[in-house]
Length: 168
Length: 417
Ligand code: SF4
Image (cartoon, rainbow over all chains, first blue to last red):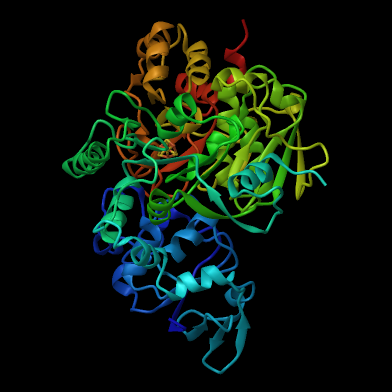
C-alpha cells in the first residue's frame, strides 16, 4: 500500500463519530453491516454514493468524540481509501491506522483540492498529488507507525506474533 | 526542569526516569476495561488473531453498561459473548447485570488508584485521571493488542494547565467549570494534550466533582484529564500514599485560568460541546425531556443536588424527567437517602444504572424536533436519537430546575434555604 488514488469528497471541521456512525448501530459488529451506515448522519446514502478508493479530505479535528472503532471500520468497508485532514482526534487516528485505513495530516490540502477531482496519496513520500502533478505536503509518521500501516494495520502484526501461540 | 504527573506516570510505566512531550514510549498497562459495545469488537479481533487469553486476568475489567438489561436480541448476544469470554478465562472482574453501572464509575469506585496507567475501550476513560491516574480511551483493536501484550505505545502529551481560583458559589458546579473551559478552548483546543486541573479551587471540589471535570477532557480533544492526588484522593481510593505528583517547576504547554467565584451556570447549545453560554443568556429553550445521569453527572453528589432542587416540587406537565444513577452503589445510597423517592414523587422516572439515553441506546431516545436538557457530555447531531433532535448540556442543578419549569432554568433561585 504505497499509493492511494481516488476521487475527493470534501468535508468541514469537527466531523464527529456520531455522524460517522450513529450510536444506534454500535450493536453491529460485522464491518459489512456497519459500512451501510457510514457517514449517514451527514450525507444520507453515502454508502451507495461512494466508489471504492474514494478519498475524504476534511478540516480540523476529524473523528472527534467516541472511541468507537465502528466509525473507521464503517468508512473503510464502505470503500474509503484514505482520509486527509488538518488534524484528527487522537483515538480516531490510532483506530484508523490499527485497522489499516490510511489517515494523513495535511495543513493545506483542504483549501487546494476540489470536490470530485482525482488525487493520489504518496504515503512514503509524504505528499498528496493532484491530477496536474502539483504536490501538496503531508505530515510524516514515526517509522513504526508507517510500517504498521504498510503492513495493513495492528491486526496483521498481532496475527504474525500470536497466531502460533495457541498451538504450542 | 520538573515533570508533570502525566509525564511521571508514563515514565514509570515505560521504565524510564524521564520522558518529554512528543516522545514515543511503550507503557505497561495497569488496568484495561472493555464494555458491552466496544468489547465484542475486541473479542472479534482476538478470534481473528487465533489467541484470546488476556496477559493478566487480574488487570482486565469487563462491564455491561451501555444497554442494561439487554434491550434486544442483538444486545443480549453481545452480553452473552462477554459473559462467556469472562467465564472461559476465569475473569473475576466481570460486572454482571445488577452488579454494574456506567463503566467509568465502576472503575472509580472499585479499581483505579493514583499513579496507575489505565486504558479503556471508551473515550471517557479520561474520567479516571481525577484520581491521579493517567487514563485514556482506546479503540477495540488496540485493546485486543493490550489484552495480548499488556502494553501499548504512547506519545507523551503536552499538558494544558487549567488553574482554578477561589471557590464556586451555590448553584454552580464543576460541570459549569468544564463547560466554561471547553467553551473558551474549543472542541479541539486540547487535542493530544493532558488537561491538568490545578489551583486552590481544586481542593474545594469533591472527588465526584473532579470526576465530572476530567470526564469531559476528551470533549476538547484531550488524551486525559488529570488531578494531582490530595487527602481526598487518598481517602476515596483507600491508599496511604500517592507519590506521583507534578513538580512545581514542571513545564506546561498553556495555562487557562478560571475564577470559580465569578462563574454562573453554563449550557452547551446544540450541536457542539464548545457552543457554551451562561444559562442567563441562552434565551427561551423549551425542554421536552430532562436527563440526569451518565458518566458525567450520575454520581451521588449529582443525585443529591437534583433532589435538593426537586424536593417538594413537581416536574412541569410539559416535560418529562429521567434520572439514572451511574452505579448500583449510588442507586442504593440514593434510595437510602430518599433521593429516588423525591424524583418519583416529583413525577420523574428513575431507571436502573446504565448509560441510558446518553448515546441514544434506549430509556429515553428523542424523536424528531424534540429538545433535551441533559447532564451528559455530548450534544452531537443524532447523539440521543433522532438527527432532528437537539441536546443541551448542563449541570444536574440546572437540569433539575429545568424539569420544574419545562424550559431551561437557572437553578440558583431554587437553592436558597
Ligand atoms: S454514560 Fe454516555 S458517555 Fe458515559 S460511557 Fe455511557 S454512553 Fe458513554
